[in-house]
Amino acid sequence: MTATNPISRDDIRSKLGDLQGEAQSQVAGVKNQAVAAGVGVAILVLVVAFVLGRRGGRRSSAVIEVRRG
Image (tube, rainbow, N blue to C red; front, side):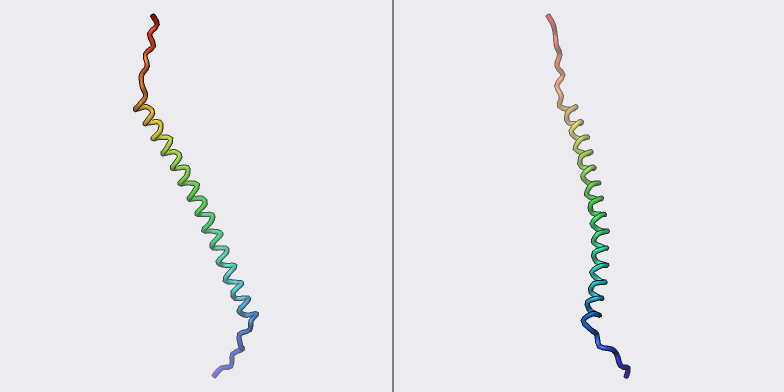
């Protein structure tokens, strides 16, 4: 049998602090990626809306003829 040192409160606290630090850094990285993806999707939606709006405007625009008499 080998004798082991008992786990102290400070040991647990330091290990939990390490885990929390790692988790926070991973969350920050994912948050940056999510923001970048959101901006990309927003730009894509704006471009699609612009293109569809131009196409719809051309299709339903009236031709007006002005005659001076």
